[in-house]
Length: 115
Length: 115
Image 1: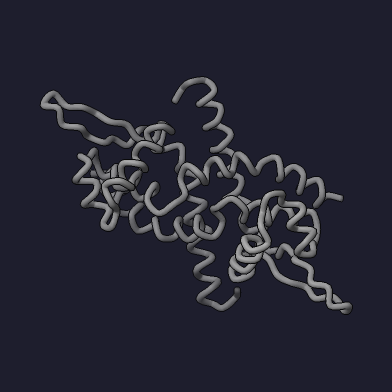
Image 2: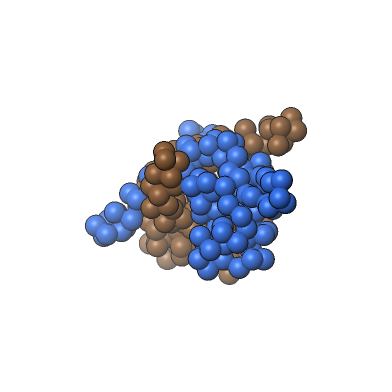
């Protein structure tokens, strides 16, 4: 009976988990946030830091991250546009910690042929 | 200086986080694991539980989940094949908890127009 209750309760939680996955999953979102952790960057600087990303993809990913409050733009007096990692991105710390932890342990299990 | 150290340290952690995201992200993986939390299921049963998933997609997702030790097959004496959620799927509990937590809080911030 307990597993069925959990299944139902878990089921109701799925959309919230999917929201988070939708916001951070994919090849670039996490890398962009981390690249900006090292300091604000212009678009071209950011693109150079993230080898292999096209301008179109970077532009779309930045729009998504801006939409979700994780990144914002700062326009300097001379018109230069800088991309800034918002403090709100810190809220992802626990999610990132668990993702990294599970990923490292999972890789170790594969190496040990436990899976 | 501290943010730069973090940026570098974070950078090294990205692949592990991406491994986890690669394994659980996407529309169906989490839903499949949860559907099997309610009990072992035949392929068709599982497909019915997950409205909207095609047989081809379900088959691919199950292969990935089997490959990563989260799901396995059980063949009954009469040849029936059941899909089973492995205990190893419990190891995702903390990841799921943080994903759900962040997703719920993020949604609340959007409702409160804080983002």
